[in-house]
Image (tube, rainbow, N blue to C red):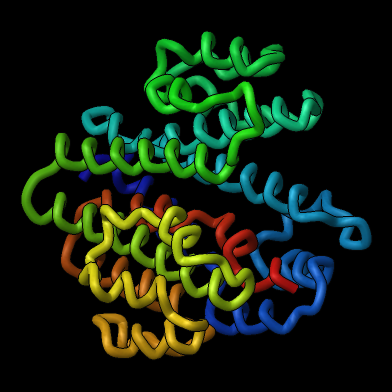
Length: 320
């Protein structure tokens, strides 16, 4: 293994070691306000520096998302600096995620007609690796100009199908772009890797996607009471490994308790602690992959697919 590979593994494992554990998650679920959540993260976790500029007396979700996005970008940059040149296409897959976030931010700012709300603050190292000049997004003032600007990129085939002459569904656009993101990761893994390494990487990716699907179903049932059609349209079912019938039953469940009851009869039955389900199952999948592969890619993917910002925007703490 090269020096850069050793450094990459060391960085990824150090980041993994700083993740929030079960007790921290349980503490977070007991907080009553967003301010309390932020105060706890600043004083009791490794996110103190990332959240240092947030005033807990005047905090809103957008601020927290911006700060955690910045932390995530910096972590990506730290890891990518040590990625082997031979597989650079794979190691740079998260650049697509960064570009999608920036495009979505721009679309939202254009729809809200608030140009000042667009945030282009990402590490210089990542900015140099993007597939288009992201600085050009700053001065774009219309949807037509944005489409023209992105006409030579992979994102154009998605955006050209959206009718921007009328108010559009932000979630629907993001789903389409996120689908493109997953397609690119799968394609890159299959192109660059074979055998057990490819199997392990796809296992991590598919597990991550499936657990996000299940997490969405549970949260919709618990907090938002969305219709079955709405829930289904928010999921990436093409990557699901649960039987189709099980997914249909989860989507049509009467409430969160039935969701957990159904999962207790599935392959996830060993991870049915309500407060620990998502985190434990994903970590178990990653742990298995690590124990059965000495490849540096597993350490890298463990950190990348477990996006740090999810601790806030997908957790119970924002439903208080």
